[in-house]
Amino acid sequence: MAYYVGLDISQKQTSICVVNGQGKVIAEGKTLTQADAIYSWLGDRVKIAEITKAGLEAGSLSNWLYTGLSKLGLPVVCLETFQAHQFLATQRNKTDKNDARGLAQLVRMGEDFLKLVSVRSRHNQEVRALLSTREHLVHEKVRLENHICGILKPFGLIVARGCLSTDTFCARVAEVIVNAEKSGIGLESMLMPVLELYRNVRKQLDALTKQTRTLAQSIPVCKRFMTVPGVGPIVALSFFCAVDRPERFKKSEDVGAYFGRTPKQYQSGESDFKLGVSKRGDSMVRRHLMAAAIVLLCSTKSWCSLKAWGIQLAKRQGLGKARVAVARKLAIILHRMWINDQDFRWTATAATELGSPMLS
Image 1 (cartoon, rainbow, N blue to C red):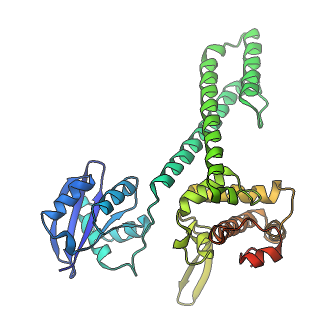
Image 2: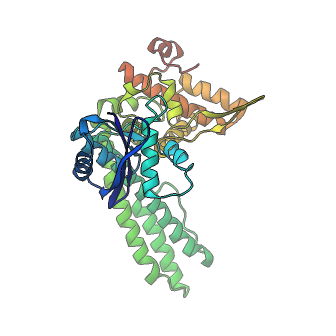
Image 3: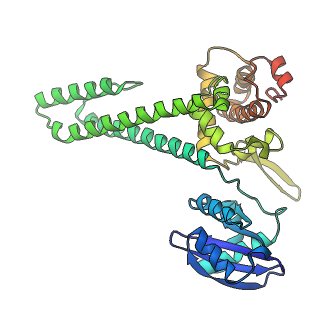
């Protein structure tokens, strides 16, 4: 007898449904959201050896549960959120019980139909956490700068901004506050605590940035990525932890689609046309690839075949479309460099020897 299991996860409890090969419900219920508790619940109702596949939807707890259940010997897969959501939306009532049933039926359809999610390794999860935390502090830094300058602007007090160090920005704000106090505008008591918070955020951000650079230099493949113009430690680490295992992509061109840099297609009857880029996959990597593309096109002084191709495309179709195309090419090139264990080739001839579709 072959059994298929659907796991609908929440923070405290997980709804479980077991169906057989014909789709008939064999057992269903709830247990604690812990790998050993789920394994014990299943073992009390069916033979673990007869479970063909257990599926859970990708989410914040999926990596932890997937790792724990796999270590216990349960054949578990992680389902793509978009596909699972669309499939479960066909049910009339949205309940945990129905979601578990739907996931079990979805798993029963087989891997030819399923869109599975690759679960990152523990190390790459830690790298991802570092990048996410740093990105959060970057947003907080910008928000505090905007708040401080926004408070001063209605009084006609303008703080010159730009790529400033912490001390320079704080000194300018303090000078403006002192001048405001002399003019009878009382802002010191409310802005000085915010300015101190800004100092602390910048201090922690600088520490994480230093940690990120050190980590990128310690990983050989990330050092290789950074030979590409426009790619720095942040982009290299982001791409590295998102791809995880480069061999899971049959073709390097698939990486561009994986990160949502290829157009969607709509075809029905006589209609067949392209839509905008899908914007699927890891949004952080997508943003980093776009930033790297802009640096390559606008800030890099040295010329390479990729930049020449991007500039020509920008002249024909505009910078917006060019940066999307260059970001897709960067993903393809980084994957090809990883597979071939080679540094970036600056010329078209060298790129062809590498097998990179740089100018295709």
